[in-house]
Amino acid sequence: MKNNKGFTLIELLVVVLIIGILAAIALPQYFKAVRKARASEALIVVKNLRDAADRFILAHGSLNPTNNPISNTTLDIEMPTSDNYTYAIGPAGITATASGSNSNGVNLGFSANANQDGFTTNAPICVDTQAGAGICASLGNAVTTGTLPTI
Image (tube, rainbow, N blue to C red):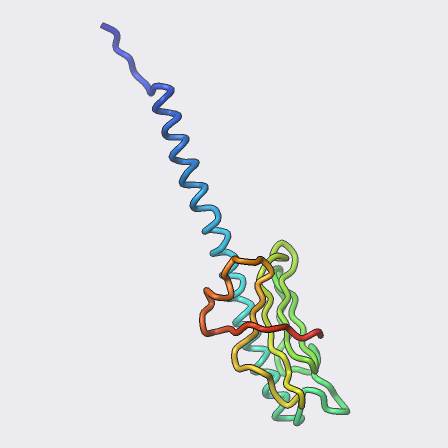
């Protein structure tokens, strides 16, 4: 009698098939988790910028006082830098625009109200550049939908 050791071709193909199925399911979920984590990072930064803008409004009366409009350099905090987002602030509001390898990510921000003495919403506006991805929805009540200001 032969003493066969090892795996048959069918057994190896079944293992490869199972690994392929698991990878096909897990990879999209991984990418969605990465996008959500990047959006959460931007959400925190945008809220910090909003707090700084609120302090600016308290000190100057509006986001656009005649002698010194709000900008990246007039805040009482340092403007953050990121590989995933480009942050901007101006009289129209605050934006976090997805950039670099995250260019199909989630954009966040606040729009200034008509008087430029505050913002139109308490929660940041969330715009998902990838239709149907559901990242904004997964952030829950922390965000709202709308149109971001042009800065």
